[in-house]
Image 1 (cartoon, rainbow, N blue to C red):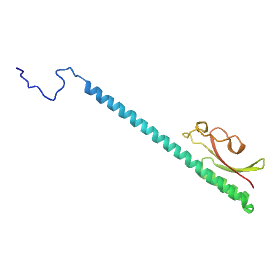
Image 2 (image 1 turned 30 degrees about the vertical axis):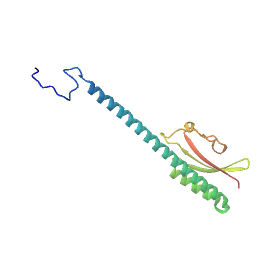
Image 3 (image 1 turned 90 degrees about the horizontal axis):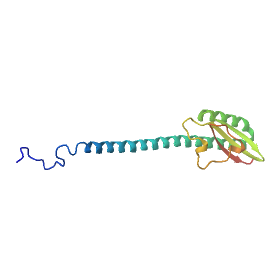
Image 4 (image 1 turned 180 degrees about the horizontal axis):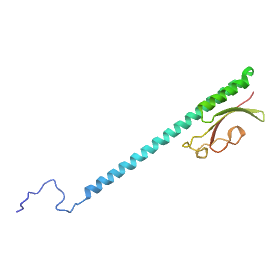
Length: 148
């Protein structure tokens, strides 16, 4: 007869199961940590892309306003200067301009890409150079073509 009553719920006897539950807990914690890091990385990517999209959207609005300003011949140059000043406020090192390229005019808004933004080479559907002009490295651009 055994002096100590045997526990019906115990799977291990003596030290046979030594650290198996500890290993299971460590694996579960490691799996949860890897999943959490993946979710955090996905959220950071989403925030970066949202900021980049917001800048492109602001630049497109400014370029559209520049096009509208060029149709009003009375205030054309002054309005372009005003929108260029507004681009400098809204976008980092923003600049708005109008260029002619073989009978087609381009309203172009350029700005300095932020440090943590995706580079233009990382874009899947990469557009042609902005309004027929090459951009310096680290710059982004939106160009709208129009006929005067």
